[in-house]
Amino acid sequence: MTLTAILIVSAALFGIGLFGALSQKSFVMLMMGLEMMLNGTLLAAVGFWAYTLEGAPSGQLLAILIMAVMAVELAIGFALVVAVYRKRQADVIEALGTLKQ
Image 1 (tube, rainbow, N blue to C red):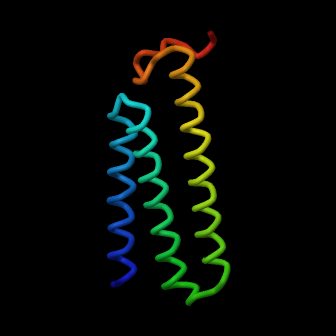
Image 2 (cartoon, rainbow, N blue to C red):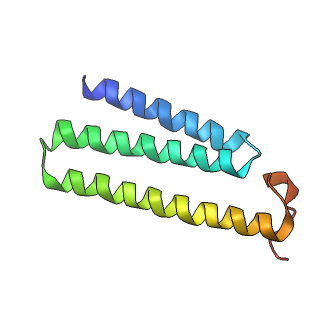
């Protein structure tokens, strides 16, 4: 597989994730779209690491850092979803007018 093919797949993942994040009304689907966007970014980073740095450890560190950010983002996001659901019984984005109350 060439770097171009990896970047095309990465761009497709990012585009599908962006569409999913912007078009869905459910909190869970929004989170899935954001995760797909981060997966596309991770695939591009690993592809660049494999083809340009020729296996240098700094590329692996970047991939591990992106995975850690993904895990933290997922945990915080689902904690916020649970908190909003408990407070307002809202499971879709449009049910929230404001987050002040």
